[in-house]
Amino acid sequence: MSKEQLVTRMLCSISRISLNEVNPEMDNKNGLIYLIR
Image (cartoon, rainbow, N blue to C red; front, top):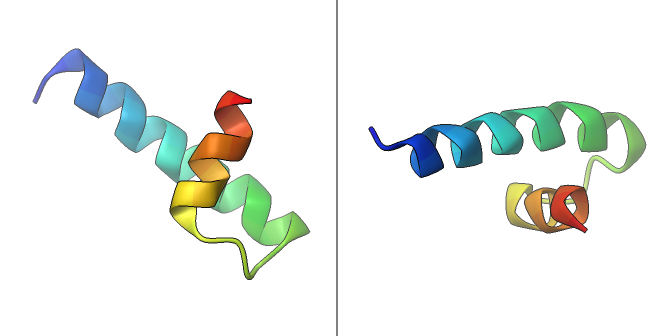
């Protein structure tokens, strides 16, 4: 696994956890975009 894939996977899991508390309907892709912005 490349470093980029690892970072992306990590961000996805973080965004899923944090955004599920705020907005459960938000999917992982939106969560990742939200986190980067």
